Image 1: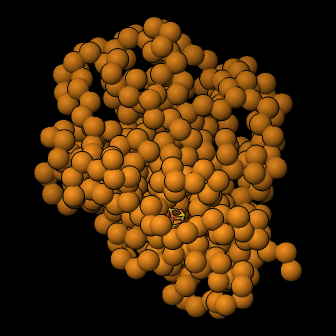
Image 2 (image 1 turned 90 degrees about the vertical axis):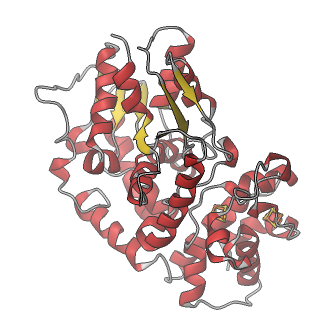
Amino acid sequence: MNMPLEDCESSLELCFRCSRCKWICDWDIKSAEFTYICPSLKKFLFDAYSAQGRMDIARAFLRGELDYSDKLLEIIYACTLCGGCEITCKRNQAKMEPLKVLHELRFKCVNDGKGPMEQHKKFAENIEKYHNPYGEPHEARFEWMPEGETDNEKAEVGLFIGCTIPYRLPNVARAAVGILKKLNIKFRVFQAEEFCCGGVLYRVGLVSKARELMEHNLRVIAGLGIKKLLFVCPGCYETFKSIYPKLGGTLKFEVQHMVEFLSQLVDSKKIKFNESCQQVTYHDPCHLGRLTGLYEQPRKILNAIPGLTLMEMERTMDNAWCCGAGGGVKAAFNDFALWSARERLEEAKTTGSRLLLTACPFCELNLKDAEVHDEYPEVKDILELVYETLKT
Ligand code: SF4
Ligand code: SF4
């Protein structure tokens, strides 16, 4: 039988168990406290929980040497798919693709009728019924829209709002809309026609369900004359940009996360900010940084705000420590997600900043959930700061 894991054989053969995928590279280490890149390994402390260990699991599967067990399933899914291992491993061997192996392991679990975890099945059911993983009423998706706001049906710019922002962080949705209005950019939303992007389903291995959502969303957007689709959520952005093409989808429009869009306006000097005299630090969301390469753009925006000082954490940009929420971990292993977020908050605290900015609602929620004492900085989306400081 032709198993998809076989596609990864070259990575599995090339892996020489060097352990690079566990820590940031030695030349980037600034202190003994913040050396790990793999949250799964640091939390569970067994080699099986690293990319290296999961490569061994994949190899054993291919050789028919391993059977499923609850523990094995837990090891496969207790990984945030943060991509830290991909970065450090590729620095060693450019042809290696550990992240592809981690995804293929999950696809195999689902194909064999063993995965995903029960909690993932629950959010998949919610998506089926309500078009969002939270089980919130679909008709409430755009309740956050300011009174009197109407759609501009002729606009060539679309705004894909996602599930987490409207149902959990409506202030971020209002900030995104407020920015576009301050900039006089005509845009449209898709109201009841917008469904979950499906990224979360793909990441837990439910590929065919993710494809159905892709087909729906692309069908809705096609024919509306959209030339550019903006995203507030990096998870949705990465899904459209990287996952939809893997699922056979063709995008007939440009996709941009709001930070990329705004950084271009900073470049062309089309936007200006009021002074904001404060020291902040920035957490790179995995979906925006390692997985789609937007490292400079948020920093460009922050550096354009007069009076603002950006204090970088020790692990930053492609070395960033994952907040702990991705890859289905928040749903299935909440303690692990909170533990990872607390390590990030500790790291943010060492910068002396009272404000920790991010550009991902999933990171924001998990970091806020993990805040156990007031020594930790306040967590906020960069778009809220942009909205507050943007000159009209
Ligand atoms: S996955 Fe890459 S970094 Fe990790 S042990 Fe294998 S070759 Fe080394
Ligand atoms: S994706 Fe992240 S959590 Fe998963 S093995 Fe790689 S570094 Fe560890």
